[in-house]
Image 1 (cartoon, helix red, strand yellow):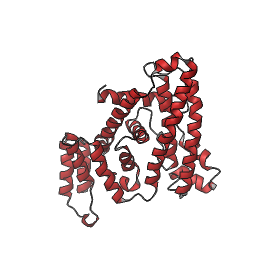
Image 2: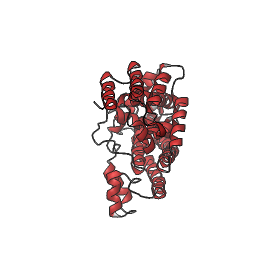
Image 3: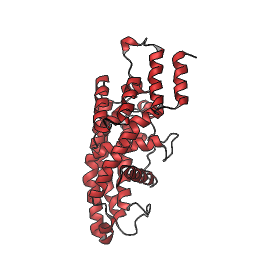
Image 4: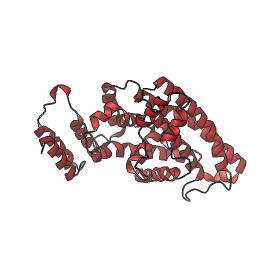
Length: 318
């Protein structure tokens, strides 16, 4: 299977899993449910508005709640998967095995819940299932859960406050092409291989009903807890004193793990980093130099002509 086919397959799994009732998580309902008995009403309102971390809720408490929630979801997922593994279970997309959709549905639900608990913005505010940004972020979450190299760095690059301050001035298309696309491609390729190696094969699990239930249930229980804890650990790190040095290290690790060295990807990445850097002692860097950086991004096709003109106008204060 080619990398492009892997990417398309994983996107299809994500999109179809999210259509299963209960997989998409309502941020406000979830945070209210998990925090209401643990914090004051004022803290809860603040958490709903700007996220638990920015609301000042103890990171230690959030970590404790996350651990407990992973245990809860893992135990629940066993029963859910068992029911789906039996003949007559919910019919999913014809081309994707029910076991596969169920497994990824549980993983995606847990990923959203952990992300919200540690302060991620609402994924579904104005976005639909087919939003490229939402699909990319969910695939990055899955990459962390599966232990794909570079996924943890990607998560921190797009999530940490210090990273957002550094990257917010860059055009969205540039971020998509140099950060989201390469890591999504790698995660899809890696998970695509793992899917074929795991016994998601529907033949066995459907041919022997009771054994099938045990197989799919045991697989979900054995896999989901360590997957959830991998994501929890990375989100906890982002929420706990993530520094500019950490950001620099993650950018370097991302390039090493994800970017194809010696390819056009590397050139685009280096141009992006060059455009994103701002030395505090040299904020008076000339507009001409900045414009040249964005012109290089334009020439490489990383940003559009419209985005270049907008940045040029901003720099020249037109």
